[in-house]
Length: 403
Image (cartoon, rainbow, N blue to C red):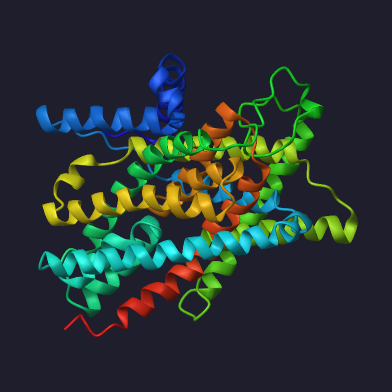
C-alpha cells in the first residue's frame, strides 16, 4: 500500500491527533512528559511492524514533505533568534557546548571500547557512537558511505541508518522521564504553567506550542515568505559549500540564513519579525515532521541489527540518561532550566534537534516556561554540534586501532 503526498499528510495529522488524545488520557504519559508526536508516531510504527510481520502488508509513505518541513522548522529557529539575546546567554551557551562536547567524546569512546570487547570492527563502534546518535540520519548516512567505500565495511550505511533510527526513538522516550526525575530535585519554585493569560501578555517562544497566537493573514504570508527565502538561500549556500572544507548540513545553512535575515532586516530597515506567525509555522512544521518521521520508521530494520550492536546502543542510551542527570543537570546549575536543558540534551544526544525541542515542549507544557533552554539548545544542537562532532569523529578515526 502506497500513500501519496496528500495521503501521507492526512496520516500525519491523524497521528498527531492520536498522540494528543493518548497523552491527555494517560497519566503515565503526562507524568513522564512523553511528546505527543512520539506517542502517536511510535504507536503507528508498531502497528505497521505487526502488519509487516504477521500479514506481510507494507505501507509506504511519501517522504517528499519531510525534508521541507524539517528545513522550515530550522528556518523558524533562525528567524526567531535575536542576536542580543544570544549574546546575553553567551556564557551559558559556551558552558552547555562544553557539556555536549564531553558527551561526544564519551559516546565514541564507549562505542570503540565495546566494539573491541565484543570482537567487532572498531568502525562499527563509531557508527554506534556520535556518527549515528548525536549526528543523526544525515551524518550516519554520509559516514556510512565513507566506511563502505574507503574502509570496506559491508552494510555500513544500513547499520548507521538503523542506529540513528534506534536513537531517534530512545531520544524521544527518555528525555521526559529524565526531566521529571530532575524537576523533583529542584529546590527553587517552579515557574508554573500560565493559563488563561491573554495572548498579548504571553511570552513568545517554542516552549508554549499550545498557546493561542493572534495572527493575521498578512503576517502569516510575510512569515511564509521569510521561511521560503531562508530555505532557498540556505540550500544555495549549502550546495556551494558542498565538497569544501567548510561543508555544512543544509539545515544549518538554512538556520544561519534565518538568523541573518531577521537580524539584518531589523538593523537595516527596522523591520520587526512578527514572531507569533513564525512560531505557529515552526510548531506546525515540527509536529508534522516528527509525526511523519516516526510513523515511517521501518522497525523491522532494527531487528536486523546484530545483538552486539543493539547492546552498544542500549548502553549508549543508559549512559545518556546518567550523563544528563549527573553532568548536564549539575554543570548547568541544578535548577529548573538545567532540567529542561537535560531533556533537550537527551533528545539530540541520541536523536535530533526536533526531538530535543519536542522533549522540552512536553516538559514546559507541564511545569512552566524555560526561556534559557529554548534559547541555548537550538543553537547548540542545530549548529555547533555538527562542527564539534566532525572534529571528534576525525580525532577518533586518527587512532591507530583500525588495522
